[in-house]
Length: 293
Image (tube, rainbow, N blue to C red; front, side, top):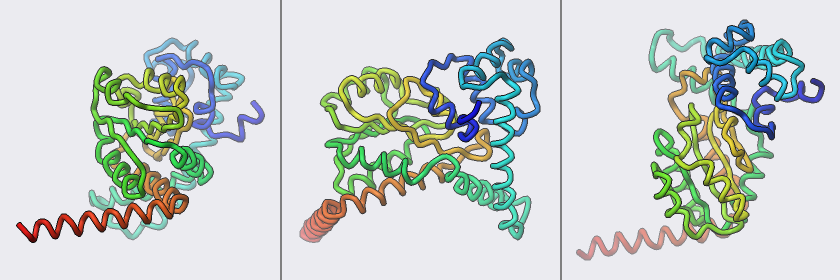
């Protein structure tokens, strides 16, 4: 461990090029979901929680470039202490919020979640994703379940900027394959996934591999669990929360989508203006037709 120590544990998982087994993914899910407890567990205790063999914990540590589990645990502790100090500063700002209120707890949780975005997503990453979307002829947005409201909002923001989008929501493998007929080199596929690898679209692996073989860009947006998705997409925007296990709202991912849309708007300002003008013209026609009824 040398240069790896400059990275966060999450970024090390994302940059790992090798294969992650199901047992590895269970361990990573526990580590990222409850870091405050993980830093005090032995390799045997961590293995017991994931219901895997203790040797799997050691193998995972070495896969990621650590000397062993103690070295990996030290890195997890460093990350946790940094995030905790950030969280403590945030809590100081909201001490005046009435304790015990569901609204107050929710506000506190979302403030912490939004503040944590800068730990995992940079403007450079936003710019890189926007460049791929900007050059794409068509954007395919794929997801299921609780990602639906976010997908709908993101598609609408892109469409209003003059971007051609197609949405594949809650589709099974056969239907997803049919929906993606016509995808071409240079197009972009944006996949959403949250809380569990099982939340990814059915046929995710085939989707990423097909995009790669065609020459289309693949982009994944989600929480820290999406870092374990394999095969890896071309780009990942992982929005980590201080408490992954109690994740409910999508404030963080929504903010990321807004950052993408706003950055794209500046990049495609002329086309976006034409799109808005076209929308206004269509709205005027619809209102006029409604008046004439």
